[in-house]
Length: 147
Picture 1 (tube, one colour):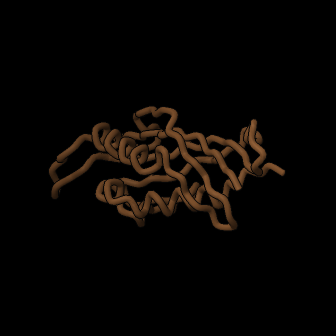
Picture 2 (cartoon, helix red, strand yellow):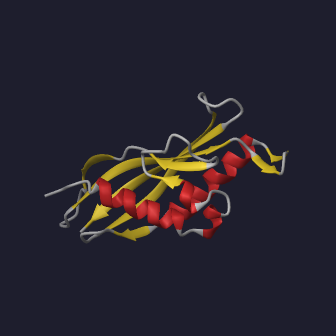
């Protein structure tokens, strides 16, 4: 029986991102969240999107499912004291690259058994509509769960 395993996949992704030094030098591990982000969060921050299962793994005798998920990174720029050292656009772009580096090609073990393979499929860099001067990177991945 195929199943998406969305919750353990999200948890495995969060664990990986929080343990990746190249990412946590840009965004502290305490600012990497699931879908729910605290109201008074510190910038920059990362949140996972809503994972979707797209169907059973085809051509395999194993139990599994394929899906998609986006990871979102947000920045208002990097400051040194009161001086803007890096624009929000550039900082968000670097956060996006670090998210992709942390997750693309990863095979992560899942609570309850099995593993997920993540593949980066593309990105987008946007001006954030909710925060003046902020930028938002969206990193897209396919997930392939096998047990």
